[in-house]
Length: 385
Image (cartoon, rainbow, N blue to C red; front, side, top):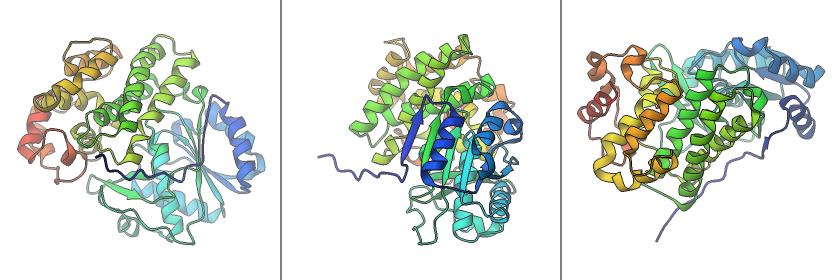
């Protein structure tokens, strides 16, 4: 008998297909926010999207913080929370990709718990798979997200924040961290560099594939994962071929969303996702690119235990009967993205060093084929050289 606790998040609405500025204005009016702090990156701060959203907010926009960089450094979280206090903000609006969304989600915790320095923030991190922080009465300020990539960080009640000094990705969880509202406007992705858009799409593909192949499957996860794989496989090449066409961009956004509903059924990821944390937090590789490199290698290493299951992956990518690992590598290549560690400047000599970063926890510990230590992880990484 299938036993499961399906956890619903505190997310209220997902709005898709409506212009971001219009949707933001309506949402801020709906929740009656009066002082909104806009969080973004320097690359987006002076662009069309941020200008339109800021204009839609009018005098409700009390400030803009754009010093959020890749991998969401904890220093950015502390700095953003300080601006929120200075401006007396009553709502946070994240405009950007996964780094902006994760940083903003964690700023809420810093504001809720009165955290003003990186060490106090680190003390609130939780181990993956453990209980989240318990809500308190003072946990009030919330956020809305307008997303520009396919990371899908906006759909989870957790966030990855980097301790840049130790080169470690920390995890934060709280039931109310998840944005109240997510706005998926395909036009909001037009300023996103093509490599970034497509590589974060591979992160979404990683979610779908690993949840389909999970050691703890669930009917909800299986159906959504298959649908997401098909949508992403069809729409990502279409975006590359027709960059101005909004329809495939929206389908990519919807596909990425589908991949993030499965965690509510407590469906764990596998080694590809966990390797991404190491390559991202320790080696500084962008998260989307990590999936481009690790997913095919993990599929190949897992073949002895789930080759039959992997057949559906090859079918959804349009090559029934082929090895899923080969199909995935070819798919990534067709998008013009890197497929090997050497493509991002990491040689075979660094594999032992990378493998030693595995601490026995996280998604690598729930891989379909058990990873029993650094030696096994080295085997997977060597398939990606």
